[in-house]
Length: 128
Length: 128
DNA sequence: ACCTGTCTACACCTTTCTTCGTAGAAGATA
DNA sequence: TATCTTCTACGAAGAAAGGTGTAGACAGGT
Image (cartoon, rainbow over all chains, first blue to last red):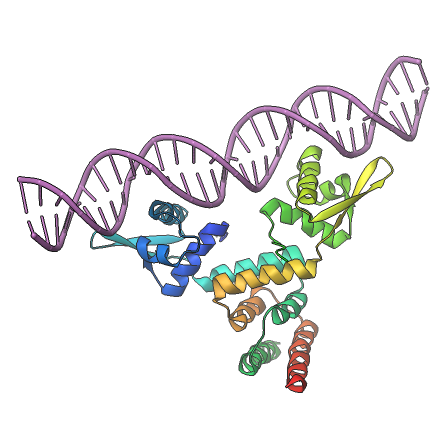
């Protein structure tokens, strides 16, 4: 299974929008993209992404509606893995330290993050 | 301060080695790079990185010794920020969930990760 | 039937990335 | 001093990324 979930800068912009909206036509994606690129540019990226297998499309009237075929979760996992490997030398701990200082977190979010760690530890404990 | 701490794939490979070793000559970096590229290719990347301001060099005998000018912490912070924004729609919580399932974590590492969250919460609590 | 607006397909161009090859400087060796 | 080896500098070339323009299909309104 060599998925190779890697995206160029602009491809990622497009995928980001599709993940957020769930799906999108060329016009819908275009409306969300920064630096308003030409219609054909956006179409091109969607076609490239389709060729690479990251999205698929269905006909919708005259237009095409594009759907991600890769879940954001999966893409996120491999993107994080790359960052952890290349920048933090494999340390998830260092990555977390930077992650939490990168933006302000609410008390609620912080609590839920702790719960994630708690549950993971509980699961590991009973596995062993 | 528009640093623009962004690296291409190969540039990141090189930076990763410099961060890990602290510094490196062309030959030292080359020895660590996968797919053993030619000597001049590696030199070229170091020169490009220098031109972009990501590394600097000092003379060391006949050779040049290259040093990162950007700390891994800083680069990591912005890389994580990009991932969180583009893939997890700004949710650090979702990012953490994927981070911890991306690779096995030792009990010790898990405990230290929890401590990071504890300390952050304590700090926020007394700030307010 | 005719014009108008929207959509895809295709071909093209420019810039950046990635990788080398060759030349020449300079210390080390003999 | 002649030769070898190890570096850097420079230039070039192929591939990938990013962005457009034009042509043609097609539905809707008049």
